[in-house]
Amino acid sequence: MTARLVVLVSGSGTNLQALLDACADPAYGAQVVAVGADRDGILALERAEQSGVPSFVTRVKDFTDRERWDEALADKVAAFEPDLVVSAGFMKLLGPAFLARFGGRTINTHPALSPSFPGISGPADALEYGVKVTGCTLFVVDEGVDTGAIVAQTAVPVEPDDTVDVLHERIKVAERAMLVDTVGRMSREGFTVDGRRVRFGG
Ligand code: GAR
Image 1: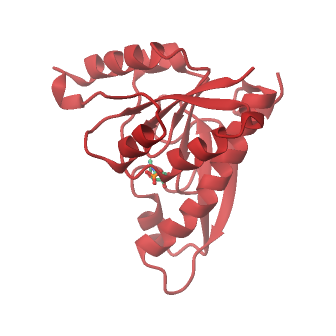
Image 2 (image 1 turned 180 degrees about the vertical axis):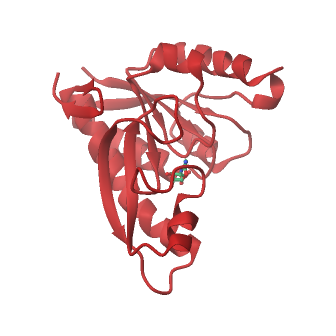
């Protein structure tokens, strides 16, 4: 069975592209059935179009409050009947309505080694702190900010002359490999979440 992925994006979509490329091989075991965004005019949406994958945009500002946006986003995603929702550079927190429907099968990639440096500026915060090793984390989304059960992590060195952009780019190379590898395993082997332990296999 091929796992159905809905990928949520907000920016350049290089993680999305890595998944689209991996899914071109039927043996990978997954297929991107839709791409959802919280804003228009981003490269990630062009990537979806170029791959012939349907996309939708659900903007917070088109709703009276965050809860309604969250419900609308959940409705949009549900229409594509995903097995797995992949938040890949999606810069919004998913709320209770979304997690009531997709909790336990929504994963997010974060450019830091959790539990260090949660939030939207992981690479900058790691650089500022002066750590010598940082990395990326793939986790099952819960109601916290980057607090969910960890599925995979990859360490990345911080070099002495790094800028935020240089460090983030180095992290993203590791992040794309981690994402493709892990989503493939989750799709082919299944996975279980038991408290904070995530295991591959049905
Ligand atoms: C990735 O590094 C992702 O981890 C990060 O945004 C980048 C998106 O890159 N997400 C967060 O910081 C969320 N807290 P991409 O659009 O090229 O895939």
